[in-house]
Structures are given as C-alpha cells and as structure tokens.
Length: 124
Length: 126
Length: 91
Image (cartoon, rainbow over all chains, first blue to last red; front, top):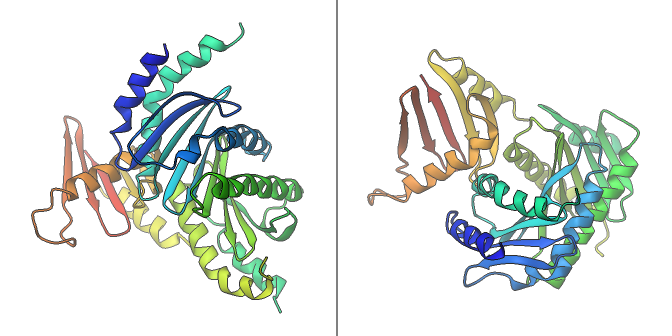
C-alpha cells in the first residue's frame, strides 16, 4: 500500500511549480511516506517539526471556529502547509512564491488515497 | 507614549467584510489590545494563538535553516485565524469562513506594516 | 479597507451575462469571489494566468495575456496583473 501512495505522491510532486516535498507522517511526526525534489529544507521532515502540527492543530480546534483543517506557516523562502488527517498529517513544503491556491487544489486530489490510509487504521 | 484608543481604532479598521476581531498580544499570550465583537473568550484565544506561534517559531531555529517565521494561517471548519509578529508583539486576525485567504493575508500585511514602526518604539527588543 | 475592491467585483458580477467573478492574489489565494467562481477555484485561475504568461513572446513583463477557457455552457476569461488575477465567468 505504501508503494502505491508513494507513486501517487510522486506524480503530484511535479504538478505545482516550486513544490519540493510531499510527506505523510503520523501524529508524532514519524514519516510514513515521503517524496521530494533535489533541494529542500531537510530539517522539516524531522519529527520535531512534523510533530508540532498535531499539538497545534488540537489547540487551534479550541479557538471557537470549529475543527482545524490545515495550517500554513510561511517562512522566509519556504511555505509549509499541513493538513489534518489525524492520526495522519499531510505536509507540503514549497517555495514561498509558490501558488498556495494550487497546493490546496492538489490536496483535494490526495483526499481519497489518504482517506484510504485513515480507514485502514481506524478502529471499527 | 502609545495611545490605547488610537491603537484600537487602527485595529478596528481591519474588521470589515467578515473579519470578527483583531487582537494584539505579547509573546506570552497576554492580550494587549482588542478590537471587535467581544465574546469574553479573547484571553483564551490569545493564549492559544501565542502558543501556536511559539511552537512554529522554535522550529525555524531547529529545522528551517534559520529562516524566520513570517506568517501563520490556521484554517478551521468555521473560520480562519492569521498570526504575525510585529515588533515583538503578535498580531492576530480572526476571520469568518467566507473571507478569502488572500484578503486575510493582505489585511494582515497592511496592518502589520502600519503598526511596525510605532510598536517597535514601545517594545523593548528581546 | 477592502470596500473599493468589493465594490468593483460586485459591479462586474452584475454586468449582464456575467455569472461569476474571482480576484486572486499572486499566490492563488482568493481576494474576492462572486457567483459560480468559488474561492476554491482561485489557485487554478491564477495558475492558468501564470502558465500562460510564461508563453511570453518577447514582449516584456508588462504584456500580460488574456486567457479564454471555452466551455459549451460559457467562457471563463482570465487575466493576470502585477499583484492580482481576475477571472470572469460569462454565459
């Protein structure tokens, strides 16, 4: 199954200019599947960064505007978009000039494959 | 000295077209100024926003090749929240779901640009 | 703050034949949207404008193309500017 998802991510990696990495990790930030281009900030895929999302997303859900669905963090040079598929997290890392709107459209295409992953681990 | 009333009036200017409220807080999460419809939950939301900012900001040192964090946008089912550092305070804008992300971003940049200089004067560098 | 933009977009959307209008920022995030063009389309609209502009025929940066996407049921006109992209859905 992992190989299937990896192939899907790889296909999507080149659809948006400046997209450097697509990663699926668990809530603690441990990598499950990841595809990337030659140059990207490798530190981002460390659990220390990825794990931040699960906590931040849970806190954001308490802001009184409903459940958190995604967090965009713009750094100088890069943008990181993380989507709430808890217990999984989908992360895009792209150049800061990349088209954020296109990245959101890309996420819509990935909903099914990651939904399958969610379904596979959910306790009935 | 900073005039609290004038500051609130500046923050108020962003509260059009679906923006609920605009907050200014310090990095510890204490509310410094507020403009918008009060729901008596501002103190909680300020603390949460500051906490999330701090977590991501820490990452920039640890993992993002020292690139500084510039803006965070939290998207939730019924609205979204943008957070940005201005001088050494945090500016936070709460928007309804109907507000375009681009508009939220432009408002944040505009407000932050306008407040940067005056706030730098009162905030001691850390 | 955004009154002028909102006014312009509303005015365009009320033009006869127009059923949708969208205005996006350079990163494909919606600034204003009306009718059939939803904020979710903002990425694709601005992406198309960027791609089309890369066909630049040596006329310089200022010569931005207008793109017409034709459907059986109507056309979507897209034009990129310096800091925004405008999309109009006409039937």
